[in-house]
Image (tube, rainbow, N blue to C red; front, side):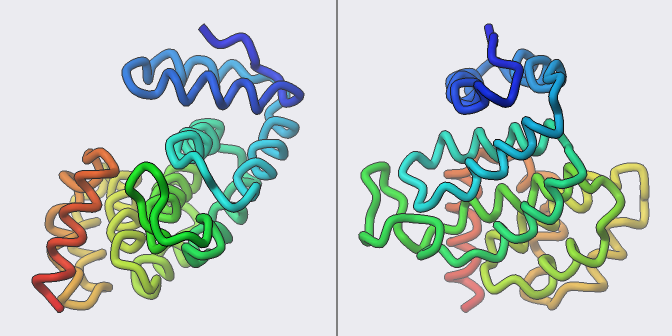
Length: 200
């Protein structure tokens, strides 16, 4: 399905991955895992990630997934930088995009926080916890929590450790991290928005 494994064709590769993410995750994983020039691929992926503003959110989500699956060590600093970008740096300045997302949408930064945890595994702990405790947007904090716990699935104390680090208003996300981590972006956003309104 994917015949663009090298960095010089990565843009076309990401476009093909975008088309495949809906129902062919295994093929996407196999294609990314088959990339031979991993250093060059990571460099191009990082440049594409910071081609802003973003007009195609689904393609950028797929791009983040490819970065996460490639799991190149250089991606950790890149993803960390992206996580902290304000929406007006990431999305066009107009108030509503054609797919219904507003210019205050943090979903890409939330996905970047998930991919950061995926790439880092159980490392890069302080940076991930800074996001969990200090990011201004709840959706990004909650995404980081779910991914942080997922990376520590073998640790029965992980949820208690994380719960001790977050304020009471975020405790529900720790308690429901497993469910939140598996939701599609639209449903995740609905739950986060509903919780934010109820706890305001």
